Image (cartoon, rainbow over all chains, first blue to last red; front, side):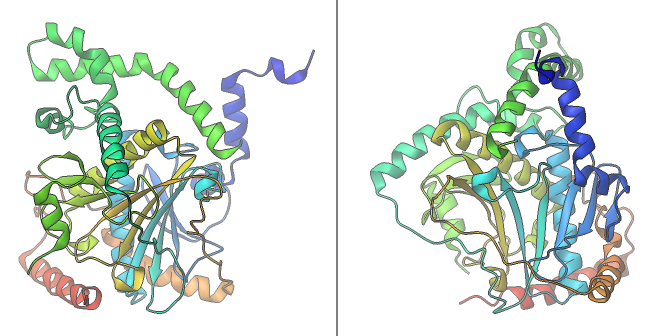
Length: 225
Length: 173
């Protein structure tokens, strides 16, 4: 019997976590130059910086790719990135900043742990990170627009393409998209919005294992892990 | 002052999604097919002018865009990129988050050459950044008394600072 057959996905995940250097950094088991920390993330100096003052925002929880991150955490990381950017502008007299995420090997991701880069910039530092500008044939653009509108509506959990009401609700913490569809039937019975939220939350938890497994597959595919 | 991005939002060209706070559109000059931009609806030139809660939501939406791109375009990865300030490659006078679909061998290079810094240099930078890190976790919330904890003088100071940052970053053609 091959040994790996006895390892459950949970065990494999735990092993990946144990071997993840960024989990060790986040937990303080590996020394780092930490400039900010809260219950969700740590911000450390990159030891191989693109520029002096290059900061990595690392979630404490182990996530391989961005789609695995819960909505609330990603919002938090985005807001922390804004704060880090301001600190770089003030403290290092940076003339600009880049916020960068490499999601998947094809996008340049090297670590098996999601992170966001905030990089201070100086004029003529020749760092790159500039997107080329190309023209797209109008027909192709139109086709891409149609496909993406649909897919985005699905990713946002909207029933129709433009449903502002659903967006309003998503302002409440964690009233996210996907679980809404599953929670819809149950939610219908509930009269109050608060109740509805609870049901949606519950539905999400129930749905989680299946979705997580799916994302893990994607994560393996994207990072070759 | 006219802004090309504001005009684009109004014209709804290439619009994929919009709500009160942001618009998600196909990039008019894409780096690769399927390159998408997220823009705050209220005009803001740089990141520092966009309210925290809008930034948080924009990054969350950027993730959803990324998922949509995986599913639709068969992308093998995505980059999220913000060019904040001319020195950082900003070309238009409106804050944007770029979502760029990636494939192996797509001829797009967004990697940098790492620099080597001495331990002393790293420690100096750490100290400097720590000194300015006091406000990193303090977020401006939507509606409910946003400036509760701040004294009037501090607000004034912050505004002046923002103007300075603007001058520093906003020198656009």
